[in-house]
Image (cartoon, rainbow, N blue to C red; front, side, top):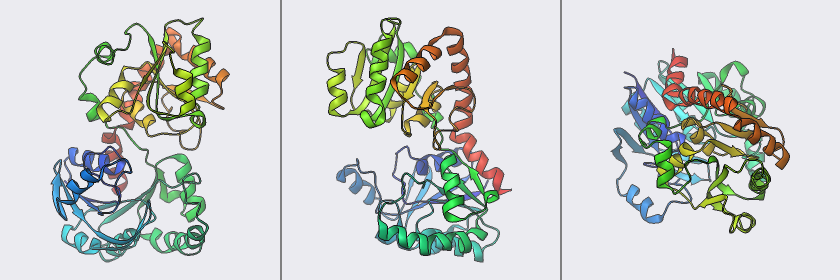
Length: 382
């Protein structure tokens, strides 16, 4: 059994982010797991009442068998924290075998590196979710980042880190190109799936469909999240509408938040089922009951959820999705336009082709489970 300390600024009790799920599966693997997090970062959709309930627990408590310890931070941005206090003291008290630092743009990484310098038997890992798309557009921030922080990470911190993990191929490239970290120090550690939670949903596909009043004899195409023209939702709706003449059994299921253009398009359309915002179990249930999950343009964490449900995919290939169909468990789109969507849906709907994709999707589910990802980290520790 190893002592693993996760240092993160985005741990929220009971949520489904990587910062939550990786410690959960490390604990399930039998390791002694501690999370050091702050009191400043919570999901934007979380109510103040729920935030207050967490803050009432104090600076140290246990959640799902994992000890949570709080650091204090004086300067915070949306994704980063600086002038973090208490991290070194907690690390000294915990004496970890592994420090897994979530994120690369916080001063707690500097403190973790200092601890590593004085405790060389400890292994330090760092993951990064940053890329060219989600990096800050603030010019002052970019100036400070480029002139101070990037060289500091690349030349001062990097020698003491065993591996830097990018959570997608694009983010691995970003670590190399922007932070000047050597390629041999970078590995892909994908965002995984909460397969334990998925498998706790015992209902069969047909039982789930009946529960949500969805026809059991239809070929269900699911898409969800924040839906609009910029996400390719309108193109998907039009593709399904045009395919209905040849394939009357197809049905489009949308869940989440639709913009006005999508609402207008699906209004009174009996072949499109629209469900509002869903909780975690409802989301996984909808992905599990579907025949194929489709996101025509942009990456979303719902893709990892669909993989964890063993559902075949149709997604646009990009630097953040190019690792999602490693097991031939779906179809990549090049443009995500209506005609390409129609071709992909027609292709995946063919019976023999679909059976193969569904079989491979179950393999992909196992490969992307956080069970496998937690094991992967320990492999690099050796």
